[in-house]
Image 1 (spheres, helix red, strand yellow):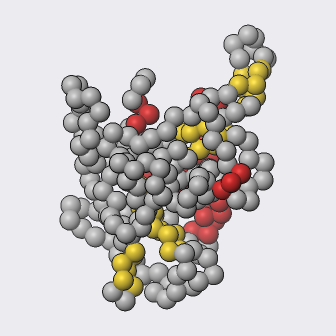
Image 2 (image 1 turned 120 degrees about the vertical axis):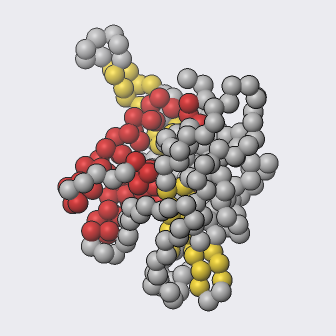
Length: 247
């Protein structure tokens, strides 16, 4: 099993304590048993966190037995449940299910901020999963107030979209894709070579100014994420413009 949680296209889930009513990142408290990233090539793992401590769960004692347990094995089913609900809701409005990368991107795009600094980090990933935010974005897409687009790109092609934004709340734009498998490593311990096969880049431009996605430095794991360069490690990228204005 070891190492499987580092795969590119899956959601790796971290475990935090109960957050009954989210109002700030300070409420999201990391457990003492949840593993942290980065991966050897610097990708963000885990990508998402949810409650994994003090979870009521089934046990093997009988067909009706329960116990209070903890672990990332308790957090992961919570994320799976949210993913299923989001797929069900999207299908009810669009009569089709989201692609795997779309669902993953939606969950990471709408996560509630967690950790000491803004943006992603190598312990909380992109933050605390937020089912309501995800469902609200699906509804906003249906009402043409947001955009969820599944686009196929050929090698060297670009996709461009003009967006009119105001400064009332941050502009969030993400890209998520299922990356092809790379070359298996059977000999090198802790290889640092990049594992992306298709390195897509997300940028926002306005009047000659370029806005870049959040990136982390695996050589400085406790430093805050920055927004000053392309992300060449992860197959999910997110740009956040705090005070957008114009097109």
